[in-house]
Amino acid sequence: MKTRTLLLLSVAMAFAILMAGGIFLLQLSNESSTVQPLELGESTGIGDVTVTVLEVTNSVALLGIEIEIEGVDDADGIDNFWLVTGDRRLPPVAAPADGRCSEITVSSQQCRLDFDISAVETSSRVLVMRRGDQQRNWVLPER
Image (cartoon, rainbow, N blue to C red):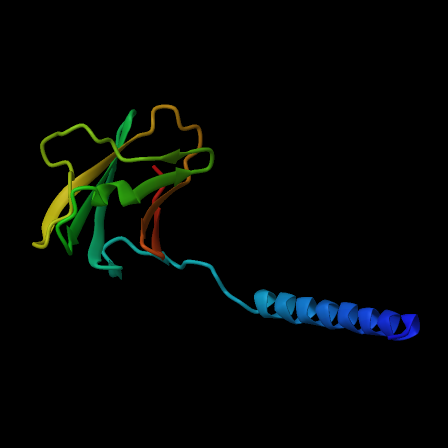
């Protein structure tokens, strides 16, 4: 092949790659990946688990969230919850306590998730549960 033919082919390939990238960016811009927040008392399925956030109680050091949860037997399922504030992402308190959630079971249970908010400086709070590739958010009332 001649040099001129190779140069024309390389320019055509560069143009094809540029067009494919532009089409991909257009597809990404039309995609909606936001997770709509749920209301207190609203039941939702997250993978193989059903969760309802019932009530939020606030003290100086702990934020307690009453939930009703059922699905499958999973001793590590509570680790799927996070409290996201304006400045931190907090895991639930894992120490056993009366009424505190410790695992997910097949049968429905009502329990409490506690989060240590003593070092949190903002008042915005979002409870996030992620299970598999699904995620649900609850925007909690500020107190």
